Amino acid sequence: MSPVSAEVAHYWNHPGLPGIGLLRARFVTHRFGRHAHEGYTVGLIESGVEEFHREGTLMRAGAGAVVIVNPETVHTGHAGVPEGWSYRASYPTVTALTEIAAELGARPGTPYFRDAVIDDPQSARLLRAAYRAAEHGDALAAASRFRSALAGLLHRHAGVSPARRPADSAPAAVRAARDILHERLVDPPSLEELALAVGARPFSLLRAFQTTTGLPPHAYLNHLRVRRARTLLDEGLRPAEVAARVGFADQAHLTRHFKRAVGVPPGAYRRGRTRASR
Image (cartoon, rainbow, N blue to C red):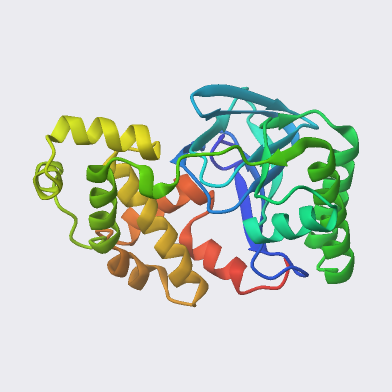
């Protein structure tokens, strides 16, 4: 069996918590590109080793480790050993974690996890039980166990998100360029046209944009396209139609970028989002 044929990934809706996605995967050669999620990523490594860059630092997570990535944090992901890695992951929203933190009596604010790789056998055990219940489609047990697992992680490992520069404090040229890319997913300008439109030099804009967002303009554009594609797939649109609507050349182009950010092709994502369980 080739390394690629040994890879498998399934994405589906949490049976008891609408809006929260779940992923179960084994990857060997697959590499996640630089991307960020609107909410949190909470993963549990079951075998092998995952390596990923987060905020300029290379992290390694082995079997039993809990991996957490905060919202809007650019990161990657790839195998850290030849045999790859297997893991389960969930994608809780900011609202969900903030509400649980409030129930625990935490200080007001968005929960923030300082450590991306956490060695906590108790949390790992609770997450494993929660993910297995979700795979069996047991809505009550899955929701109960998942909330308990998140509560434990919040209690032991989270603080309040450190003060960050608000979006409107980014350089004016970067804010303007970002707005243009949001508006022109289908017909984006070239770097030179974008720089001219915001009154900046191309290289200066490129450098400032990447410093501010963590991604160069072209990667940021594809990042926006994938997010918009997810919304359209959630609404039931077919991948070929989605590709055209978000500005990808064709379905193959959408699939390449979508899988590098989400872990599964858009068709598999769409099927998973329409099922209560797997």
